[in-house]
Structures are given as structure tokens and as C-alpha cells.
Image (tube, rainbow, N blue to C red; front, side, top):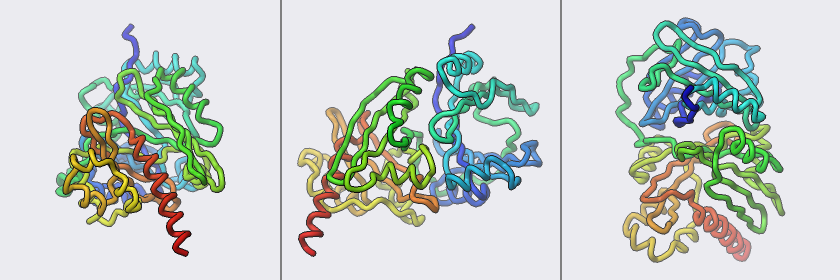
Length: 361
């Protein structure tokens, strides 16, 4: 029997109030293509879902037609948010057996799903908060079609945002739970620690650990808030969301400046970075960026230098009613890190800017 292996993120499923509206938001604003639809008329009971794609990123946007559905309960309790981080794997039955023996809670035993055209094996386990991991084994590995989804003949999106792949997933963990969930991924899915870091300011802080699967393709950033004078942004997320959950998705771009301009023109607002942050960028990095730095400051793009390269990042403001889920766009230039110096510099720059404001008052 072939040993199981993880192959990457198959899709990310988000539960929303209105799948049609949400799917068209991600199409018109973030440049995704809506490629398929599932609903009661295709054999999916009580649920409406749209399958979106841009580059290798695949999203499912789902809502329900049943007022008693657990899907609706999820959205009421947690707002529109990510429910399922589905992982492509081979030998799902073996993976499920190993995961549950290691302590994972079963949601769905390995089940064949077949609509006569597309056939796959699916199993699901619980993870942090109310989020789940579905394991997907495709009988046609070259296809990403899903059973009971019918293709939509939409014209290709003429305004793609240049998003290419899912770089990483950031998860806000309830206070005291970081070590538990780190151990879960190490024991259940054999993830490895890529890096770990604690960051503190005079008011708050956070603990973080970056985990990846044995192939290095799947990356999770687990963050836990630490209070001091004020609650941390992580604790605020957990409070508004109601439990641990996906705080943001990071999408890669080959040209973050172009992506930022496209998103800005579509009305997306970004986290505002204080001028002091750009004043403190190392001279060596300023020489690399040259005239791009002024544009990056205007677009609130962060930059972090590593030994052999650098990365650029920007963060949208929360996209939902509650101040919870948002999107990161990242461009890597010979970079494998996660903006460690960015985070430190940003915390310090914000504190410095606040102190100046207090002196001025």
C-alpha cells in the first residue's frame, strides 16, 4: 500500500450569508474567476457554492438555503469566515486512520463522492476553533474539479489582481492554546517548526510559530496574543470571532505594487503604516528599492531584508463586518522568511509615533 503524503492545499472554503454576492466580490475586486457552481439543482442539498480560481489559488464560497443549517449557525456565530482548509493527499484512508489515532477528532470518515463524472475520496477532521481539515484524494490527480459542481461559462476575468498562489495561512489562537495546536500539527500531520518568535511592546504582544508540512508546501503561522496594558490584536480577533480561527490568507504576487494599485482602484483599503517605519528602513535596502520606496510608502507596503533577498508585504483592512479576517499580499525575492523584522519594526514604529503624538498634545 502506498504511503500517504500531503500534496498541498486543495481549496479554502469560506462560509458566508450570500454565496452569489461574496463570489462576485472576490471576482470583481480580487480578480478571481468563477469557474463552477453547485446547488440543489446539481445535487447539493441545502447549500449553494461557487468555485473560484486565480493562479493556483482555489476558493469555495458557500451559503445555505436552510435556516436550520449548521452553515448558517457558523456565519451567525463567527461572521463570514473560513471553515475548511482542504488538503490534497494520496491514500486518504491511511492518513485519516493515522490522524485519528494520533488524537484528531473525526468529522467525516473516508467517503467516496461520485457524481458520475468526478470521483474523489474525502475525509474530514476537526482542528482549531470551528475550523476543519478535509483530506481530498482525487482519482484524476491532474484535475481540480469537484463532484456535483457544474462548470460556468463566465468570460475570463479581464482584471486579475496578479495573485498567483497561497503563500501561507495565519491562525489566531485563543490564549494558552499555542503549544497545544503546535503539538497537534506535529503529532497528527507531521508538520515541522520552521521558526518561532515572541514580540512584545509596552502595551501588548504575541507569540508565534511557523509550521510547514514535510514537503514545505503547506505553511501555517500560529499566533497567540499576550496582554499587557491593552488586549493584543490577536485577542481582539478571538473575541470578535468567538474562538480560534483563520486571521488572514497570504497570497503571493510577482508585482506587489501593481497588485496594490489594482486593489486600491477597486476600493480596497490597506493597513496604514506610519511614516516612521519607512524612515527606519536600512540604507542597504533603500539602495535596492530606490525609487520604488516612495511608491511603496504611498501604498503602505512593508519590506524586510534577509540574507539572500527580501520580501514585500501589504495587508488589507478586515473584509467582514467584524474586525477579523483580512488578506495579505506578499512578494518574495529570494526570500523564505515571514517578515520578522517587519513585525518588530512596525510595532516599534507605531509606539514611537504614538509617543510623539502624546508629546505634541
